[in-house]
Length: 249
Image (tube, rainbow, N blue to C red; front, side, top):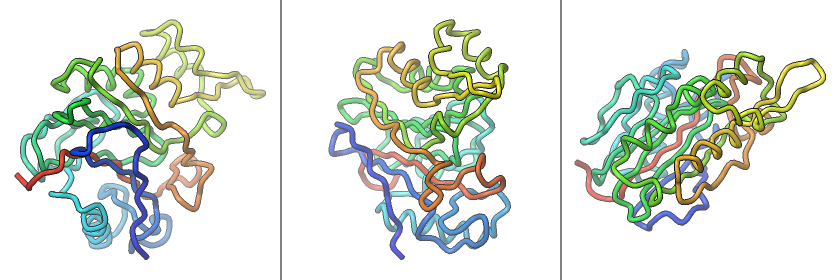
């Protein structure tokens, strides 16, 4: 079957291409079925390579995405050439045409960034640890633009009703932002339902980002379209990618 793509509903310039994948349209089997794009989750490397080829073809990407080794940290990779893979980082930014920034997720929040003139783009892997530690703010600092000229799109992630966490997660956010408690609701078990979308919006808006879009999916609830580590344990990864259209560099 063709590779389905989710295209952001945001006012990005026509020169910017962005998309998220679903779990459909690939060749992987078992818990990785079928379009697993993660090379470090235990899937057959040949299947992952074919899935990545299918993504490039379906999205008409100008180059291989700059796949990162994500570690739930705050390191930002600045990509200047096509196919710069294997960097240990949880976000990538670029102002070069033809360079594809991308992140892999299976419940964590993928965030795409672009300047209103299309001159720079970025992709952020924002799980709770990275977000609480400041990966969003770090990416905005590295993106060569004023935040008032920056747009953000929140891709498919786990939603608040499906995301139960403990006190340590709420404390991690409140340590740097005392008002972040609004992103948590106490449940009947005395734990918290965390809203990654609301927490990300709060940080982006506090940083002065001109417009924040998206945030209306749930990877845990939509088993047909998305992988979910919280729901399934070991599983595949979707990709969320962005680039300035142009020749490969």
